[in-house]
Length: 286
Image (cartoon, rainbow, N blue to C red; front, top):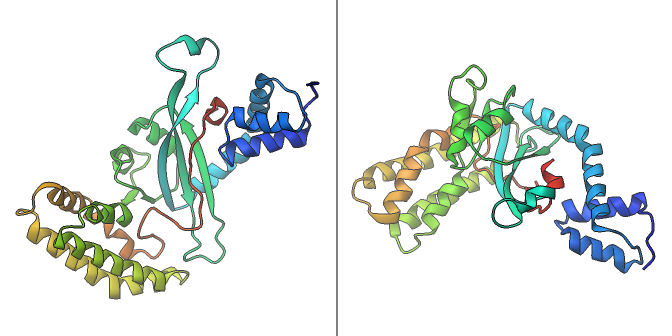
């Protein structure tokens, strides 16, 4: 097959398949070869890195915009990153574990002029110090998260993040009880939580003051009933049910915070937004 110079269109198609469609270099390269374009794998790798480098200023501007918001969602997911050069000879296997952090600023549920942005950052660790570094200098006041303890470092007064508070996720909490479907008490918790989501559907896209008013009127009594049941059964529950009850009680203050601020969401699963998936080459971690 005759080798040809890769056109800009081909390079951008490869980059889109790799990062947007999560296609591997091998699969994307095979598609290009099927079009009669010869290439070396190293050429594709360099092309992906060049595209990522060219877009880096835009990506950083997006991250700055997200960090300038007062309410942000955060999550992270592990990815496997191929080792390069001499690093291939070190340790077992051919990949290292990295983490893709996703930070979402999405105010559409209460702000008609909102510009939703999700910014991604790649790091080799999900430690508290790594998370603190990512969030340094932020204007964020409410960070919506799951139960991962690494974010707890952000909620301590250290001169940088002392005004940030956690907002916990009812979807994660509900899952704890859904896994215990044979328990009448667990089913009762699930039904109560479903009632909160009915309120959320009615409150969506209203001004944040109206969202807060609806929640105080309709959601607060549900949450109060959940708290009453948790306290009533925390000493007698056993096994996974006890674990689920303790998990909920330990995060209850952060779980109910959304009721009193119409800008916050009930969970960390915002609709109509994309989240990080998988990426398998170092270009994503540069």
